[in-house]
Length: 296
Ligand SMILES: [Zn+2]
Image 1 (cartoon, rainbow, N blue to C red):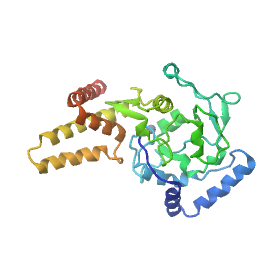
Image 2: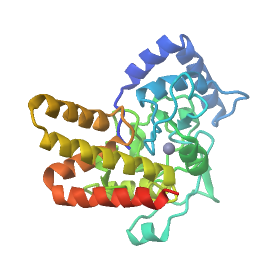
Image 3: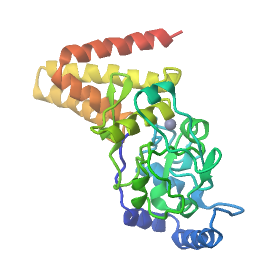
Image 4: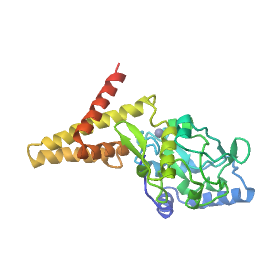
């Protein structure tokens, strides 16, 4: 995961250009939910602005950083995802490893669900796009927190007081995912510098199965990136002249920029290569072994 920094105002401008009048329609609907005290409507309009988030995220899933199809062909592959669920927040079950790591979830007020965040159904800072595996299969209506739940909240910034345990990649008001999750080769690791930040990284990794090798295509993409990147870095080091060097450096830049898939994984590998080439070589070999192991 990486952050796609943008303000509410900038999002409003982009959406007004893409879909004039949408913000006013969305505001009207939010006023209705406010009067009702819960989310209810016969049909929604958020898919109309999905493309704005697809562009902002360079066509990548906000959570697993896989790059999906282009704007012209990929709208079906991207889900417009509500970071905080609009209708209900289901109770998520902690794994044993997370319990052992000291993570404690806030229990629902009653039963197994909390009310959803009805005032955020049309909040621009509550959206991102994600792949169907991350959204439909894993995210669903869960929203684990470790603070006090405020389902009636209308401002995502103030709702940080809930201590959400998932990382929000869109906006400029929350922890940068890169400060919470880093990569050692193919594997993500929690890297926050406080208990809460560490918990956020751990839960986000476990929640989206980012370290589960059964997410085979995710791991294969990371492995391919590490193998390519190691070659580019090595070739840049060995280049015979500045022209040749700049070609390989440009390839490194292209592989690590935010628009590339798995930027967080690629940047961490690049950083390691610059600090410890032997360890980077070991991780390169592990990536090669992984690719061999899934090759049939
Ligand atoms: Zn995904």
